[in-house]
Image (cartoon, rainbow, N blue to C red; front, side):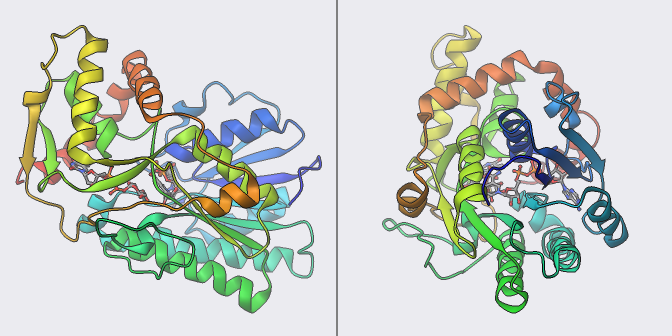
Length: 355
Ligand code: NAD
Ligand code: DAU
């Protein structure tokens, strides 16, 4: 889809972590587009993530659940969108282990609802349309010591979260093959950065270092993830949305593998420096706890295709991105306090008290 003016793009999940960075990028980079943020505002959705752009004339917000087929229908009629960038999802693996059905509803059925709406409203008018499904590298399962996930890697999901994302990917491709719906997909590695909800490793540990709570490392701590700064993911999504060939999938990653325990030690070191602590203050907070069931040993992305076809590459080094991320949390203590009050405490107790 080219970037000619006057397009209307619905971004689902735009009040969440990655979605808010995508919304900001599109609202500021494409003033001629109408950007509609469609989000149910679950525990993970937060309009405080978008305060700086909420008054932009090309920004619109619709508080809508993707499970509400009638509301989705009305939004298609109201905005007549040219494109959907679909990020809305239940996104946390540990929560999927506690409540798998929530993931089936939102990630699978919610995605099919959106596909149905696009099929119904775009019928026969596919030329300037695009349905972009944002997915995860977790659909590919776990790697051993070596190797990388490519776009051809066989799907092998292990958690209810990754199984639900895999199912949604299959439905998106099925709508392309069966109905000709114009689609693109991307499967990305672990993101980090500002606005990340403190249930995930990096923001949870930043919050626990600030509040001097234990840092619960699952299992032996030797699990490996490939970390990408969230703003680089947003730039990749921009490239894929505008220039990815119809029907194609792109893997997105940071070429940046870290074992959890090494990452946590780097985080402790950077936090101690920024908090003015004596070196070594935070590391003793590290506590090895019971492992996550079905824990995937290693993820690592081969991002050659998006690099060669679309000219995308990560632009922020991990040390620089982590430093920017910590600074953001230290400067946004009100944001952190708001999202860690109330129901967050219940989740935390359920997730960590028996480990
Ligand atoms: P997030 O949990 O921070 O945000 C999800 C957003 O979706 C929230 O704003 C929430 O309110 C909204 N949402 C949830 N259920 C909804 C529903 N039924 N209807 C409408 N809105 C709903 O998630 P994130 O980490 O920003 O991830 C966004 C997308 O990117 C997800 O699809 C996820 O699978 C994918 N992804 C995430 C990562 C990562 O590292 N975080 C990596 C690769 C892919
Ligand atoms: O790979 C992409 C995926 O990355 C996304 O699709 C998911 O939405 C996102 O949540 C993320 O999944 P992970 O499970 O890899 O992220 P998380 O931050 O939950 O965990 C990262 C690693 O840290 C993982 O090996 C589990 C471990 N961990 C996590 C938490 C929350 C701990 O050791 N302790 C913890 O308390």
